Image (cartoon, rainbow, N blue to C red):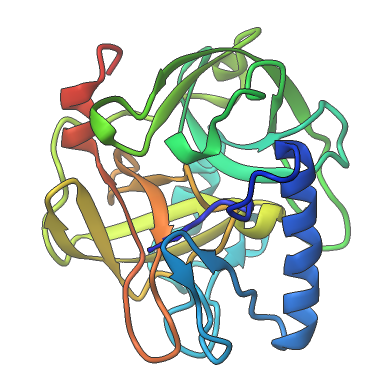
Length: 269
């Protein structure tokens, strides 16, 4: 399994330094692999000929404001449900490094992956509207909200976390509905997030399997930085939290935590 955040597994650097080092490595990998990033697996290295988290030869993700509807979800769907999606970042500067994704589930509550959270999380920030404009030539103005508390982190051994943000970003960007049930096999799903800490992108596919604590996807590309992204059903409801890559050139699947399992562990949801 490949954790879809942007931090390598080492303790010799600070968390901020780790994320910046991972960003530099990602850039180098992009150059070496003609645009396809490689990551280190949480339980072993990905082979040099494999593309971690990309299902096949190409990454189908598209920037949200350039999306034309060809991946399945409508343009209106993406424009509506992109709004509560934010990127975790070290500081409240527009050029601060982004390292994980997540979704507002209340005016001041942000749902993300547990492995995106550590001892430095309180005092970091979440950026909203980190997106390329429709012409692709410029970034939208960002809004930054400070993390004031980690309310839940990996309860029940599940890879999720709920953060409290200062202010009420949900009053501006809206909130996602957390569904009460899991999706079924072959149901359409969408992930909107920040792969490799880049401006917000959308990718879509189907549910391949719902088993244990996990949802696995059929032909849905993710990259480091997508960790914590909400898994959306056809109505835009959260049915899971994306956590792991597993796709390669020759097979595998990407996956996340089931919403029913997260609900069973959480006292907030």
